[in-house]
Image (cartoon, rainbow, N blue to C red; front, side, top):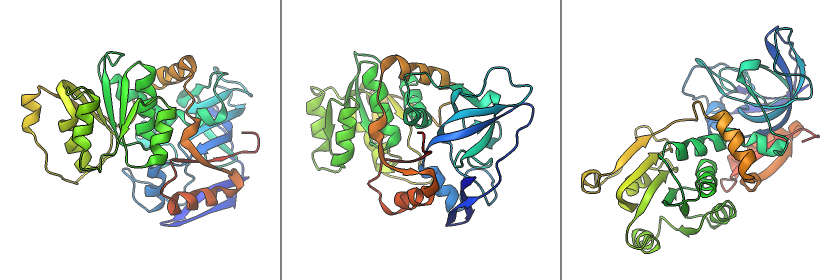
Length: 325
């Protein structure tokens, strides 16, 4: 079978390897769609948050079809359509454990969730990144139609926040300099957009919020300057949710605004415990996340998909898919 393998730092190829075998509690899956994440590039470059070894098959944003099940598997059968979680105890699927970037791969029954019939393979492969954005809106405490939310950054996670917050009824303002990403944000429900690099950024937010500032701020860029600006676009008693990751960076921040505005802030990472809710939310709201996918390659050319991510920073989400996807 064909599999995308990271062979050593910076080296990757689509190779022919054996189809894996399954144990009693395991499931054999046929990959249907796989997304590439920034963390995959970190893995390729030889740096990741937990230990791993080469060669490794990446792929933690995926959808797949069940081909076979072990004798102890009771909840799944061949033909079922599934997605799977990537944080598996102390291991990470697609990082310390080889992932979905192959024609066939193995997962445990307990990691998997069925895809509702009204979600496509492509939408299924977007569940993992969307779950992070959805979780951010859950952590914003009772986000609803009474809120005006500012989303700082329109990468894949920020765009997921836009979609989830809009579907929950909030008025959404996206802060993003890229016109292409702003266009996608508006497709997903953003009501207005501002350029955070413009000199009048804060004044524009004030004008759009009637001088009140945002009642909820989602920081999804991971840039220290944006993290600091979240305090300034926030209104009185606003809830701030920090999603973007930057460890070790710094920027001047007006910390006194925490007290003078009576702000609440929390940081989150990943999407612990919300996959079933995320999938149900997508299925029931009818959100179409497919505009996030800006390039698609066949699985046999997954190496070209990786190279596209490396070479073209304008891409939002690149997928590689099987012929039936």
